[in-house]
Amino acid sequence: MLVHHRSATVDEMSRFPVKPFRFGVQLSNAATGAAWVAEARKIESLGYDVATMPDHFGDQLAPVPALQAILDATTTLRASALVFDNDYKHPVVLAKELATMDVLSNGRVEIGLGAGWMISDYEQAGIQYDRPGVRIDRFVEGLHIIKSAMGDGAFSHDGEHYTITDYDGLPKPVQGPHPPVLIGGGGPRVLTIAAQQADIVGVNGSLHAGVIGPEAISTMTGDVITEKVGLVADAAEAAGRLDHIEMNIRAFFVSVTDDRASQVSAMAGMIGVDDQMIEDSPFALVGSPAHMIETIQARREQYGFSYIIVGPDELEAFAPVVAALSGQ
Image (cartoon, rainbow, N blue to C red; front, side, top):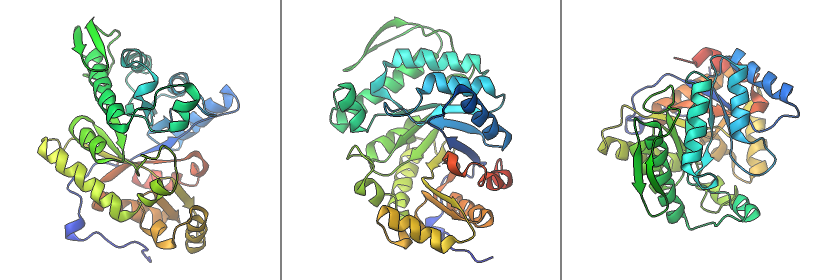
């Protein structure tokens, strides 16, 4: 088979231990409850491991009730926000909701958490859009509070942004000490925090502009992601956590096709980049299922990515890739 990616060299090999592949689908909306449930059951039947949702104020279902509906409709599928914005809910409230969901689903929740980035959400809702450092400080406290609320016994927290007094979060989740934590980030500080504290690290482009635009697209190249993955590996190694972390990426540009060259060019033209950027970007998966299988295996070898999330449009077409690689 003709391989359209270059193999990782020794210098480019991921330092993360090889983890089994997992696959997720990012959902946001459905016309009816029945359609939402049907989609969840289809995702499960096709062998995907996780259903995820964004957490924004635009045209999407609210993640907590919608994710619970997914969990209620399935038996093995896990569910997570990708990711909850720490600024939208007090962490005690979010911790209680997530622990309740974990109990009701018999331990199928994952905790996706981030510092917040989409400026339109903040402006429309009248929430203060603090500079990144402040939002990240608040997120670090929020993460500590969520983990503490799910732990044994009561705790207190006296921080710059939150004060918690002798609080014992109940119910406790089925998964102890807490469900797996996914932290998504594109900047050095959040990726370092993720390496030190998360179970799953989601690597993103830069979202400092508060919108998906040229800045974000320009940081989705293979070279930039190589640097970011190296930063995560350095921080995880320093913290003694390299073996623990699962590396995640949300593939935004996905097309299952036998006419790969034309589709790559079309995607590149649509977002205003050259074809080579799509060829090299870990956020793109374009080609036949056989080509995608080779590409995903190579990216695990190079970057450590073993947990891949796609959108709903390619759900069925991408299923042969899931069948071939899931758990491998």
